[in-house]
Amino acid sequence: MKAIMVMFDTLNRHFLPNYGCDWTHAPNFSRLGEKTVTFDNSYVCSMPCMPARRELHTGRPNFLHRSWGPIEPFDDSVPQMLKQAGVHTHLSTDHQHYFEDGGCTYHTRYSSWDFHRGQEGDPWIGQVGGSPFSPTHLKTDPDPNKPKGMRAQDMINRQYIGNDSEKMPQHGTFTAGLDFIDRNHDADNWFLQIETFDPHEPFYTQPEFKKFFEKHYAEYTGPDFDWPGYGKVTEAREVVEHCRYEYAALLAMCDCYLGKVLDAMDKHNLWDDTMLIVNTDHGFMLGEHDSWAKCWLPFYQEIAHTPFFVWDPRPRKFDSNIDIQGQRRKALVQPSIDIPLTLLDYFGVQPTKDMIGKSLTQTIVDDTPIRDAAIFGIHGGQVNVTDGEYVYMRGYAGDENVPLNNYTLMPTHMRNRFHPDELKEMTLSEPLSFTKGVPVLKTPCNTANGGRNETFSKTMLFDLKSDYAQQNSLKDEAVEKKMIDHLVTLLKENDAPAEQYQRLGLHTETDK
Image 1 (cartoon, rainbow, N blue to C red):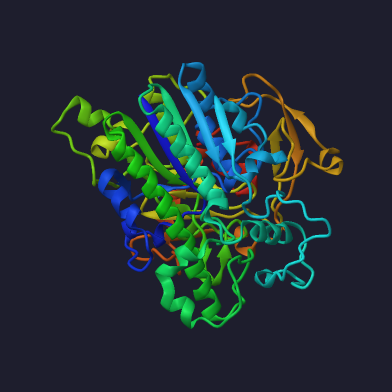
Image 2: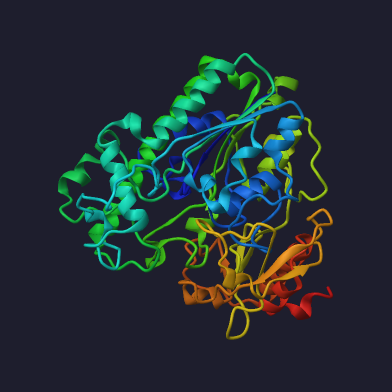
């Protein structure tokens, strides 16, 4: 058995023809839809990047217990489990978060891996004194005349890349992945993860991919703008529209390299014996709700409702009358926790008792439901639940976002370790149900004032059938009670810390 997972970061379903978009350039995504099963009801679980990737290893939600961080010593890792079962697992990536303090234990779980430099201010090209180049696209910084940090490094990296498409990190990532396929297509028992940071911001790509939108670029006279900040839209309408085209151009590049993977599947007849998964961690706000980006605001559909595609060769192999290509599925799925269980099932490896995602094997065949509701969110933010018809966002109760703790043995943030001041009040917690009998550090934290929108404290209910754009919060006690019941059930299933109930004002529900 063989499997390939092509993972994009920040892939917005609303820009794909598979989900109704008619103006972007993505013919290979259309081709993908003809070859695979398309999921219409796919949702995130933990936000953002590394929390979602921890789930891809462990098959269980991350955000109820901790924020960003590495794989824990007690965590089950599906790539490692497959490796130990005799399946060669290979990661080809340009996702720089794997190589920072908060992600440093992921890539080493694979049998082999390669890394391609240069995404989003990756500290790659050394330039003493900062960037000597004009950072016109840094206009969202407090002082755009004084570029610093990640955005300044991004300018240095771009100057090195220039107009050479082969220096683009995505090119290196897919080229290495395709080389793995070419060398190993006749071998058995391997899993390849081709993972690119694109189309994550900054929406930087080469002119050859902007040519699909020549009219826009010919008419646009505003400032360079391909890297929106995280916050409310303050830019003029034409600048917002330009940024959406910049995203679309980068998406066209993603589509091009996806096409190369589909070509390799055709060339080596891999459709007969190879699973193909195409997924993302989350979407992105590109002006909707008058907002940019993610994580500082509620996880509206543009962020939480994700594209997802799977091809499984087994149904056709065992029954030639079964044809799943080009079909769509309505079942409620969460790729970040369901993919690992699906891969284990595919390779005949038993999941551990701590994994609570679901295998999609039967759902792929006939749309068998696997859950009544899905929980999603970010550590310290609203805890959300959907049943596919409604989305319920539960904000924190009271004036402050407390109590709230990180439960971890790996106290790191994205790019740095916890500061000693953060650890002064830590205690040793009793083992959690999934920590293999190991006590963990319990570190108090409060993200209420961490630059997030005040709506994180609000509780909102949306009817997706009548209000998919989530413009008007619904008042319906019966529906809210049903969604609270789903939420409490999922909190219990995840062994959520007791203070989560208190923080969310659900402490009276814990005896249900």
